[in-house]
View 1 (cartoon, rainbow, N blue to C red):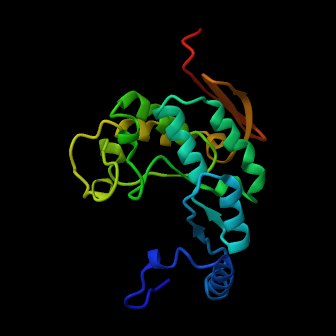
View 2 (cartoon, rainbow, N blue to C red):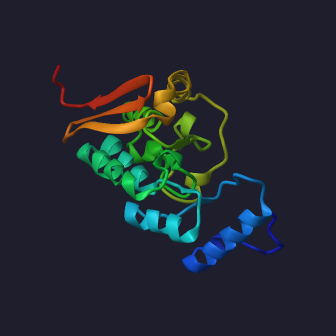
Amino acid sequence: VAKPDGFRLDAVKHLPLSFWARFNKDIRKAARPNFELLGEMLDGDPRVVAQVQREGGFTTMFDFPLHFALNDVFCRGESAARLGAILSSDRLYPSPGLLTTLADNHDLPRLMTQCGQDLEKAKDALAFLLTVRGVPSIIWGTEIGQIGEKEPASRASMIFAEAPLKAEIAKWTALRKQHPALDHGATEILVASNDVFSVMRLLDDQAARVTFDRSKQP
């Protein structure tokens, strides 16, 4: 949508949902069929995000609840059961498989900062992001391990240098493309304990089991 001179998207974040419902309805009337409207509500509660999607008339939303859980579990060592709690709330969304998932972005602390610059923790977080339901979003700098707690560091210019996470992202992206169950399969939670999180991604003719285990047990 073309923006008039002087119009700032960040200046409209406090508009009521009734505005967005009307705005999005009008946009759909003027747009081509199957036009997708992605909403952003920076909140860790799935109920809040689902309400904004439903009442605001958005096709889908950025999945900030899963983002916060991902960083808490893989970067800060919190209970893996948090992931199960968030995914169990998928019933609140009309199409949870369309939610846009993310490990970081320019408005948030970067992944490597969240993980204390621990490369292995960041790799685990990205492996989860690229095997869980939703549409994964990778922003510039994640592949090079860009750090930054807040602006301006979190949105610094791209540095075309060594990219220690590029191969990890490429590996899981290729597997996701190769196995449709990882891309758009239904999610069944098998284990959600303090140290183990395991899900099945299910299609009619394919199933993929993904397990994260930090228990140090066989």
